[in-house]
Length: 192
Length: 267
Image 1: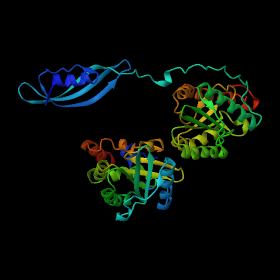
Image 2 (image 1 turned 180 degrees about the horizontal axis):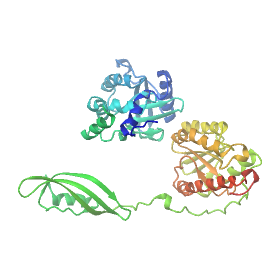
Image 3 (image 1 turned 30 degrees about the vertical axis):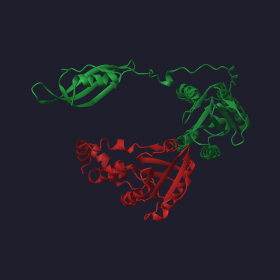
């Protein structure tokens, strides 16, 4: 046991060594889980009308018809937070063509929350602001548990809320992202 | 820019009467709610940071503690504090013991108990064939599977319900019903609780209710994961939920004295 005084800084430093992925799932497994989840919610896997015009194809695209309206969702699967940043450009290009009415998702296997938060805090919350502005979502899919957690963002189709294991929650962990004092506190506490 | 008087009017329109300790003709530049507390009687306490321009033309920002009242359309009543309606049907007879001779006896017992509770809340039993028991109230269905033990077979029964949820949608309730204590059927309380530790969260994620019927009193059923969507039933389970820990502790303490459930004593 350490003889020194126990500090929160020391305690938090123990978290920094955790691996990025909480479970090891391949992209294929995550994609299968996303498809299963969408079918579970009531979506049908499909191709968008403008499929041939899409320069970047989504990994999954599905639609659900409901009394007069049709909900659409498109997304791509990424391996971890290092890859996640490269997922926004394809989503932007899809959004340019498919429009605002489609929900856009980056699906990931369960990533440790710390990496998610670090990712969102990067470059003065660049990705966080982007997700908020574009209404993108980040889903964490666990094929073993057959569950999906909407870590960031919310879909336009409210039926999803009945099926997500959790919704949101990450925002709370790095409370008030736009406040400079929270950044200072984070820097001070984590010694960054 | 609004004046203090106009801001008061806007608050009043929202049903909120707050006394501002600032002159009515001052121009308000910004209002931040720094802190807010609401009280059950409708009282409300705010700590407001008001930036206003005073009579000398200076911008002043100050903190003001304010008390007021908010008019709510409906009183906020926590459902769990409300005593559930008494049974309209005659209660089922007590068993007087907690042990089951075999799984079949347990299944019959928990089947009768859950049927009694649900039909008492206005549901109608319908032969459906996809699950052990199916009830309907209006457009809402209740799909129930029975299991004598919290084990792999019990988990399999929940997977069937998850499949049904994918087929019939989230507008219905889905539940696995088990005996509250399963020692006599070969599953210890420790094992049972580990089962819930491992599978409880994923099952709740799929909105699968797991309900345990008291072994000696069929009129007492405890919620182990989530409450059903139907309000009357949810209220019943909110009421019985806290009783589980009491009964569990009583059961454990009885066991310590050497009288196990296998002896058939009532808890």
